[in-house]
Length: 312
Image (tube, rainbow, N blue to C red; front, side):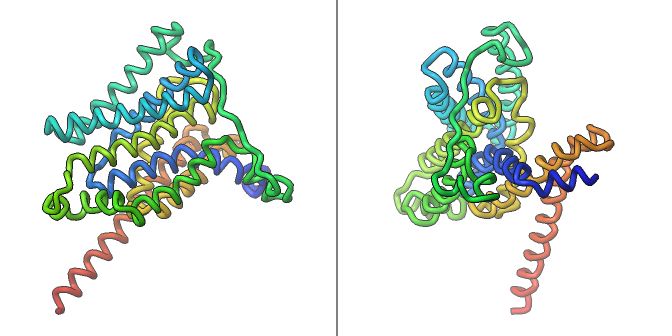
């Protein structure tokens, strides 16, 4: 256990937390956008998975990882808009649509991976490349701080930047006001001549951009290949982070960091005698506990509000 505590208190552990948090932050920002627009985008898991594979193929057969990132983003947008078309334009049940899309993404990515590389597990045979890491001037020379914050993959810095970008978008721009109105007062939005359907499509498109970047990080930043179901539930964890963060960018980002700490801790615990299966459960157990605590607090707050209104 001494080795475990030593690794947790190390700069390497903090560095890994940021790396692990990157796809969670990006996906949770996408979930924040759609939640504010009145959409529960369960399909973010499948969007990440499809984008991850699309990026690897584009990088290997195209012009490198930057081109792969672009294709990942385009794939994420197209997938999100497809979900929106079926659920909003064709009036299918949104939850069932997202479940069907996630199931299709899991099977479809394996099919196309086998069709291209003749392997149902990974794309290791492809030279898909990796997006670069960046050293931050000045900060890289600061002891401890430089080891934690510098030399991350470029998408990790984009993810941190997206927290502020999404905050500005939602609370400082006319489009953000429309997106929030689409979720809180859709009838009022329509009454002033703004298309509710168009606004929600835009929200899904923005969510697709963020989900696409999250998928690209998984296959061209976290590792340099695609593997079967490599998102491993991170899209669902991002939805949990959105719920715990009350659909606010900062709250979702902090919740994502909490889940990232749990996942990074599970890696450190693998060197102990604890069963590997129990260790691998840790991030998901923390997710469930977090949602339980959030639900209890929310119900308590709602009950107090009802009592306050009743007393009036």
